[in-house]
Length: 87
Image (cartoon, rainbow, N blue to C red; front, side):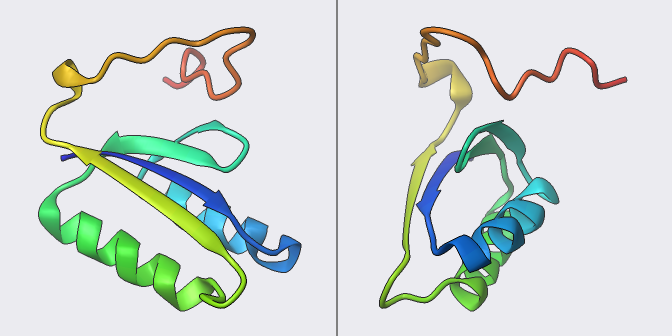
């Protein structure tokens, strides 16, 4: 499933969340990741985030869609998470 994760976490956890999500997804811009995940990967990501965040303080939004072809996205301004340089 195609997944978008948006997070707002305490500064002491930002780098932990970012490093964890980079293992599974593509960084798009500050506090936003997206990518195709299997059901098993989705569960690992969700559990991993739950283990990092403080549920009384932090907020994480997870959006899923079965196939990226049904997602319409537009970028206004610069694209921060470009994957053009990846070989």
